[in-house]
Image 1 (tube, rainbow, N blue to C red):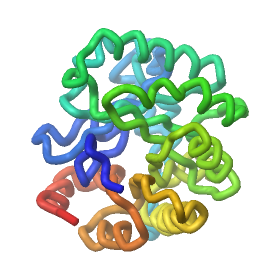
Image 2: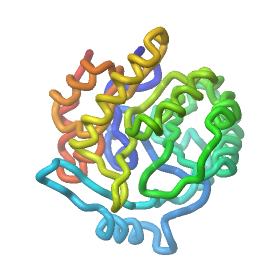
Image 3: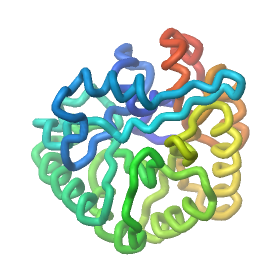
Length: 266
Protein backbone atom coordinates (compact mmCIF):
# COMPACT_ATOMS: atom_id res chain seq x y z
CA UNK A 1 0.00 0.00 0.00
CA UNK A 2 1.49 3.32 -1.10
CA UNK A 3 2.48 5.73 1.66
CA UNK A 4 0.69 9.07 1.78
CA UNK A 5 3.87 10.69 3.13
CA UNK A 6 6.56 9.43 0.76
CA UNK A 7 7.23 10.05 -2.92
CA UNK A 8 7.27 6.99 -5.15
CA UNK A 9 11.06 7.29 -5.55
CA UNK A 10 13.31 7.72 -2.51
CA UNK A 11 16.97 8.73 -2.32
CA UNK A 12 18.57 6.52 0.30
CA UNK A 13 20.93 7.51 3.09
CA UNK A 14 23.45 9.07 3.12
CA UNK A 15 22.95 10.37 -0.43
CA UNK A 16 19.75 12.22 0.40
CA UNK A 17 21.93 14.60 2.42
CA UNK A 18 23.41 15.91 -0.82
CA UNK A 19 21.00 15.16 -3.71
CA UNK A 20 17.35 15.66 -4.54
CA UNK A 21 16.68 19.31 -3.91
CA UNK A 22 14.03 19.45 -6.63
CA UNK A 23 11.37 17.87 -4.43
CA UNK A 24 10.40 15.08 -6.83
CA UNK A 25 12.08 12.49 -4.60
CA UNK A 26 11.81 11.86 -0.88
CA UNK A 27 15.28 12.53 0.51
CA UNK A 28 16.55 10.27 3.27
CA UNK A 29 18.82 12.28 5.57
CA UNK A 30 21.22 10.76 8.08
CA UNK A 31 22.12 8.25 9.26
CA UNK A 32 21.98 9.94 12.70
CA UNK A 33 23.11 8.17 15.86
CA UNK A 34 22.72 9.31 19.46
CA UNK A 35 26.26 10.68 19.70
CA UNK A 36 28.66 12.30 17.25
CA UNK A 37 30.63 9.82 15.14
CA UNK A 38 32.49 11.92 12.59
CA UNK A 39 35.74 12.40 14.50
CA UNK A 40 37.54 15.59 15.42
CA UNK A 41 38.16 16.54 11.80
CA UNK A 42 34.50 16.70 10.76
CA UNK A 43 34.08 16.95 6.99
CA UNK A 44 37.65 15.94 6.20
CA UNK A 45 37.30 12.89 8.43
CA UNK A 46 34.34 11.79 6.33
CA UNK A 47 36.36 12.21 3.12
CA UNK A 48 39.16 10.17 4.66
CA UNK A 49 36.69 7.45 5.64
CA UNK A 50 35.32 7.31 2.09
CA UNK A 51 38.78 6.99 0.58
CA UNK A 52 39.81 4.41 3.14
CA UNK A 53 36.74 2.19 3.26
CA UNK A 54 34.63 2.50 0.09
CA UNK A 55 35.61 -0.08 -2.53
CA UNK A 56 33.96 -0.48 -5.96
CA UNK A 57 33.65 -3.92 -7.57
CA UNK A 58 32.77 -2.95 -11.13
CA UNK A 59 32.51 -6.50 -12.47
CA UNK A 60 29.75 -7.18 -9.92
CA UNK A 61 28.15 -3.73 -10.10
CA UNK A 62 28.76 -3.55 -6.35
CA UNK A 63 30.20 -1.38 -3.59
CA UNK A 64 31.53 -2.28 -0.17
CA UNK A 65 31.86 0.30 2.58
CA UNK A 66 32.74 0.38 6.26
CA UNK A 67 32.10 4.06 6.88
CA UNK A 68 30.90 3.44 10.41
CA UNK A 69 27.98 5.92 10.20
CA UNK A 70 29.90 9.21 10.53
CA UNK A 71 27.48 11.94 11.63
CA UNK A 72 27.27 14.86 14.06
CA UNK A 73 24.74 13.16 16.36
CA UNK A 74 20.97 13.55 16.63
CA UNK A 75 21.20 16.56 18.95
CA UNK A 76 22.92 18.56 16.21
CA UNK A 77 19.43 18.86 14.69
CA UNK A 78 18.13 21.88 16.57
CA UNK A 79 14.59 21.33 15.32
CA UNK A 80 12.97 18.67 13.15
CA UNK A 81 11.52 21.43 11.00
CA UNK A 82 15.09 22.37 9.99
CA UNK A 83 15.36 19.12 8.01
CA UNK A 84 14.82 19.29 4.24
CA UNK A 85 11.12 19.57 3.44
CA UNK A 86 9.27 16.23 3.56
CA UNK A 87 12.44 14.24 4.09
CA UNK A 88 12.86 10.87 5.79
CA UNK A 89 15.07 10.98 8.90
CA UNK A 90 17.21 7.84 9.19
CA UNK A 91 18.41 6.91 12.69
CA UNK A 92 20.42 4.05 14.19
CA UNK A 93 20.98 2.82 17.73
CA UNK A 94 23.75 0.47 18.80
CA UNK A 95 21.86 -0.95 21.78
CA UNK A 96 18.56 -0.68 23.63
CA UNK A 97 19.75 2.33 25.63
CA UNK A 98 20.74 4.22 22.49
CA UNK A 99 17.38 3.57 20.88
CA UNK A 100 15.53 4.70 24.00
CA UNK A 101 17.39 8.01 24.09
CA UNK A 102 16.97 8.56 20.36
CA UNK A 103 13.27 7.85 20.65
CA UNK A 104 12.85 10.14 23.67
CA UNK A 105 14.70 13.02 21.98
CA UNK A 106 12.69 12.74 18.78
CA UNK A 107 9.41 12.64 20.68
CA UNK A 108 10.30 15.81 22.58
CA UNK A 109 11.14 17.59 19.32
CA UNK A 110 8.09 16.25 17.46
CA UNK A 111 5.77 17.43 20.23
CA UNK A 112 6.90 21.00 19.59
CA UNK A 113 5.69 20.98 15.98
CA UNK A 114 2.43 21.00 14.09
CA UNK A 115 1.76 18.11 11.66
CA UNK A 116 2.70 20.28 8.67
CA UNK A 117 6.14 20.97 10.19
CA UNK A 118 7.05 17.33 10.76
CA UNK A 119 9.34 15.43 8.37
CA UNK A 120 7.78 12.86 6.06
CA UNK A 121 8.87 10.16 8.41
CA UNK A 122 11.46 8.29 10.43
CA UNK A 123 13.51 5.37 9.17
CA UNK A 124 14.85 2.96 11.79
CA UNK A 125 18.03 1.42 10.39
CA UNK A 126 18.31 -2.08 11.84
CA UNK A 127 21.52 -4.12 11.98
CA UNK A 128 23.78 -1.93 9.83
CA UNK A 129 26.77 -4.16 8.91
CA UNK A 130 29.37 -1.37 8.98
CA UNK A 131 29.07 -1.15 12.78
CA UNK A 132 28.67 -3.58 15.69
CA UNK A 133 25.27 -3.66 17.42
CA UNK A 134 24.20 -5.33 20.64
CA UNK A 135 21.30 -7.84 20.40
CA UNK A 136 17.81 -6.40 20.92
CA UNK A 137 14.63 -7.84 22.35
CA UNK A 138 12.51 -6.89 19.35
CA UNK A 139 9.17 -7.29 21.13
CA UNK A 140 10.31 -4.84 23.80
CA UNK A 141 11.92 -2.58 21.21
CA UNK A 142 8.76 -2.13 19.15
CA UNK A 143 6.58 -1.95 22.23
CA UNK A 144 8.70 0.93 23.56
CA UNK A 145 8.66 2.94 20.33
CA UNK A 146 5.03 2.28 19.44
CA UNK A 147 4.08 5.91 20.33
CA UNK A 148 6.09 7.04 17.28
CA UNK A 149 3.21 5.70 15.17
CA UNK A 150 0.87 8.31 16.59
CA UNK A 151 2.47 11.25 14.78
CA UNK A 152 1.47 12.44 11.33
CA UNK A 153 4.35 10.79 9.50
CA UNK A 154 5.60 7.43 8.18
CA UNK A 155 7.67 5.14 10.40
CA UNK A 156 9.87 2.91 8.23
CA UNK A 157 11.76 -0.12 9.52
CA UNK A 158 14.84 -0.69 7.36
CA UNK A 159 15.64 -4.39 7.37
CA UNK A 160 18.79 -6.48 6.92
CA UNK A 161 18.71 -8.70 3.80
CA UNK A 162 19.15 -12.05 5.57
CA UNK A 163 15.88 -13.88 6.31
CA UNK A 164 17.02 -15.22 9.69
CA UNK A 165 17.71 -11.61 10.70
CA UNK A 166 14.76 -9.75 9.20
CA UNK A 167 11.94 -12.19 9.97
CA UNK A 168 12.06 -11.74 13.79
CA UNK A 169 12.15 -7.96 13.27
CA UNK A 170 9.14 -7.94 10.95
CA UNK A 171 7.18 -10.32 13.17
CA UNK A 172 7.71 -8.20 16.29
CA UNK A 173 7.05 -4.98 14.37
CA UNK A 174 3.75 -6.28 13.01
CA UNK A 175 2.69 -7.33 16.52
CA UNK A 176 2.96 -3.68 17.57
CA UNK A 177 1.29 -2.04 14.59
CA UNK A 178 4.27 -1.28 12.33
CA UNK A 179 3.72 -2.04 8.66
CA UNK A 180 6.20 -0.05 6.56
CA UNK A 181 9.46 -1.84 5.74
CA UNK A 182 12.49 -1.03 3.60
CA UNK A 183 14.16 -4.03 1.93
CA UNK A 184 17.03 -3.89 2.45
CA UNK A 185 20.05 -2.60 4.31
CA UNK A 186 23.49 -3.59 3.00
CA UNK A 187 24.67 -7.20 3.14
CA UNK A 188 27.40 -7.96 5.71
CA UNK A 189 30.74 -9.02 4.22
CA UNK A 190 34.27 -9.13 5.60
CA UNK A 191 35.06 -5.50 4.81
CA UNK A 192 31.72 -3.93 5.73
CA UNK A 193 28.41 -3.70 3.91
CA UNK A 194 27.82 -4.78 0.30
CA UNK A 195 25.46 -2.72 -1.85
CA UNK A 196 24.71 -2.53 -5.56
CA UNK A 197 23.53 -5.23 -7.97
CA UNK A 198 24.15 -8.26 -5.71
CA UNK A 199 21.89 -6.67 -3.10
CA UNK A 200 19.06 -6.38 -5.62
CA UNK A 201 18.57 -10.14 -5.77
CA UNK A 202 18.41 -10.35 -1.97
CA UNK A 203 16.06 -7.38 -1.64
CA UNK A 204 13.66 -8.74 -4.26
CA UNK A 205 13.62 -12.07 -2.45
CA UNK A 206 12.92 -10.34 0.87
CA UNK A 207 10.00 -8.38 -0.59
CA UNK A 208 8.42 -11.52 -2.04
CA UNK A 209 9.03 -13.42 1.19
CA UNK A 210 7.40 -10.75 3.36
CA UNK A 211 4.40 -10.52 1.03
CA UNK A 212 4.01 -14.32 1.13
CA UNK A 213 4.65 -14.70 4.86
CA UNK A 214 2.08 -12.05 5.80
CA UNK A 215 -0.41 -12.41 2.91
CA UNK A 216 -3.44 -11.18 4.85
CA UNK A 217 -1.93 -7.84 5.82
CA UNK A 218 -2.89 -5.64 2.89
CA UNK A 219 -1.87 -2.54 4.81
CA UNK A 220 1.83 -3.28 4.41
CA UNK A 221 3.89 -0.65 2.61
CA UNK A 222 7.17 -1.97 1.21
CA UNK A 223 10.11 0.07 -0.05
CA UNK A 224 12.51 -1.81 -2.31
CA UNK A 225 16.14 -0.80 -2.69
CA UNK A 226 19.51 -2.17 -3.72
CA UNK A 227 21.13 -2.17 -7.15
CA UNK A 228 18.70 0.33 -8.68
CA UNK A 229 20.42 1.97 -11.65
CA UNK A 230 17.76 1.98 -14.39
CA UNK A 231 13.97 2.26 -14.77
CA UNK A 232 14.00 -1.48 -15.53
CA UNK A 233 15.28 -2.11 -12.00
CA UNK A 234 12.39 -0.04 -10.66
CA UNK A 235 9.98 -2.20 -12.67
CA UNK A 236 11.51 -5.36 -11.17
CA UNK A 237 10.88 -4.07 -7.66
CA UNK A 238 7.30 -3.12 -8.44
CA UNK A 239 6.67 -6.56 -9.94
CA UNK A 240 8.06 -8.15 -6.77
CA UNK A 241 5.59 -6.22 -4.62
CA UNK A 242 7.30 -2.94 -3.68
CA UNK A 243 5.18 0.19 -3.31
CA UNK A 244 8.14 2.60 -3.37
CA UNK A 245 11.69 2.25 -4.70
CA UNK A 246 14.91 3.67 -3.25
CA UNK A 247 18.18 4.31 -5.05
CA UNK A 248 21.49 5.32 -3.53
CA UNK A 249 24.91 3.92 -4.38
CA UNK A 250 24.50 4.59 -8.13
CA UNK A 251 25.05 8.24 -7.20
CA UNK A 252 28.63 7.45 -6.14
CA UNK A 253 29.71 6.81 -9.72
CA UNK A 254 26.95 8.62 -11.65
CA UNK A 255 25.66 11.68 -9.76
CA UNK A 256 23.42 12.51 -12.75
CA UNK A 257 21.61 9.16 -12.52
CA UNK A 258 18.66 10.61 -10.62
CA UNK A 259 17.43 12.06 -13.94
CA UNK A 260 16.59 8.52 -15.07
CA UNK A 261 13.97 8.22 -12.36
CA UNK A 262 12.18 11.54 -12.82
CA UNK A 263 8.56 11.24 -13.80
CA UNK A 264 8.23 7.50 -13.09
CA UNK A 265 4.73 6.57 -11.95
CA UNK A 266 2.91 3.36 -11.10
